Length: 130
Image (tube, rainbow, N blue to C red; front, side):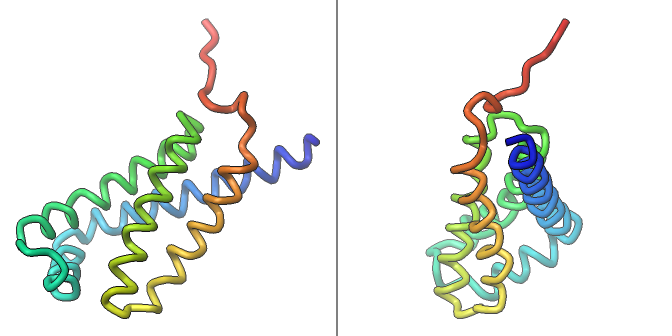
């Protein structure tokens, strides 16, 4: 049982680090990312403003979600948010036929599904001792 918890802990931390780093890279190269999104997904939304705002927010949401998963704060909610982010991105990627980019989101969704079913209920939020 203890070995299983160690594996779940490791997968949770690795998943969180991957999500955090992916968001951080998008934040660092935000101009390039926004330009990429506008170039590839311009036809999907009626206004350029909505696409720019979404492209600007998603990296930050992804970064902080990864941080929450690593920190084990509201882990079930954090997993759901990360799952929704990846699902939205998969929809955009499939719509624009950028299939090589599905690898990252497919791996992340697989890890998040595993975590969703394997995270202990008593690990929902960390307890602070005073």
